[in-house]
Length: 153
Ligand SMILES: Cc1cc2nc3c(=O)[nH]c(=O)nc-3n(C[C@H](O)[C@H](O)[C@H](O)COP(=O)(O)O)c2cc1C
Image (tube, rainbow, N blue to C red):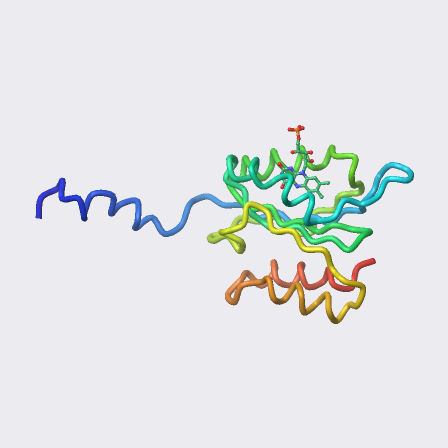
């Protein structure tokens, strides 16, 4: 087989199974910093940020319950760090608290530049809704932090 065989060309790309290095950061925040401000829905925020995240190679999940947000940001360490700094300055939420920040070998949400989900009132429904989004084989710490959001105020 020739080196320039069209089937073999690009094999190196296809065989690149994991991108390195990856960072996953999860934070919790309180919505609506300004007086009388209404919390943006997680869905609306996710739509707003998807195009930018795609350009930056960021993926993740944004959960909201009307009072709080939990966001998973995953991507290169630089992109995640820069985005967290940007998001940290956003007056639409406050009191950001990082609950997980670690290197990762794989993304938990590889196909979503930001998936937004607004949770119902019932903690049981919330748990089921979050569970449904977490892929089998997801990192245990990531799963645990996300499920914990089901009982947050
Ligand atoms: C809860 C929350 C999550 C956000 N997530 C992202 C995000 O994943 N990506 C993004 O580009 N902006 C996100 N933003 C918006 C940023 O804070 C900021 O408004 C946006 O990046 C535009 O910034 P710029 O005007 O400085 O370009 C989020 C905002 C909030 C309140």
